[in-house]
Image (cartoon, rainbow, N blue to C red; front, side, top):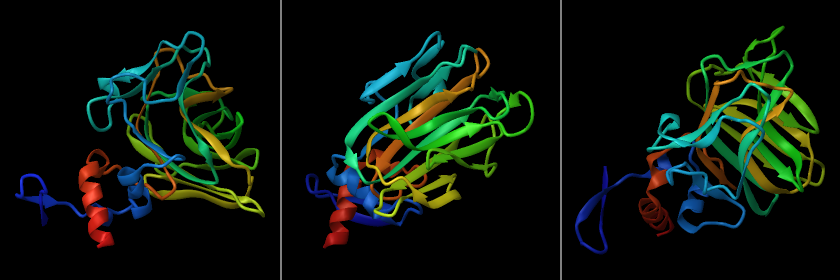
Length: 263
């Protein structure tokens, strides 16, 4: 345990070396300390509503899209979607300054019987440019017939390009992270689930990104009525993010740590 003197009280207080936390890079921490035009977060529902998003979409007869104590992963609230069985969308979006490199992490939890038909997909995270999806993190069903979802998927190069069962389970929290970078000869898309890489491809679109959305955008997908999806602790950064850290709620501590590293 390290200690530093509080500049106001002059008392020694414990300081956690958050830059040593696995999976949370100093580049990502820089956002907390200094902000940035093309990154955002945390979006964590702690306002008790959806106001942390630039905009929200709740189509048709979706039963609920709100901030709710039942949906929390960390803190007091998380985001909750209760479906209507009609295949409608519910998601929050955030407009950003045009970016050529971006990481986004979100925690997601599917209901115990989160259903879909074979081959149907739904976006959980979308990176878009002018409304066109350039990269996305999806959920899908890959075994025959209708039933519970069983795979993650990644959208890149204009199509779903990979599927994975790595760390997939219903009725449990997972953190998913999507990375995208543009390039003259094609961009780069990488995806992780609970810190394990499930996809990496350097042959992708080289367009810029101007919006990020998190939630549920269906592609032939219709969870049963009353089924739920929870999500929480959304971060976007130009540096790798990784698992949730208590530091996300402690910007003063983060600034102290970054200043000490500079010195």
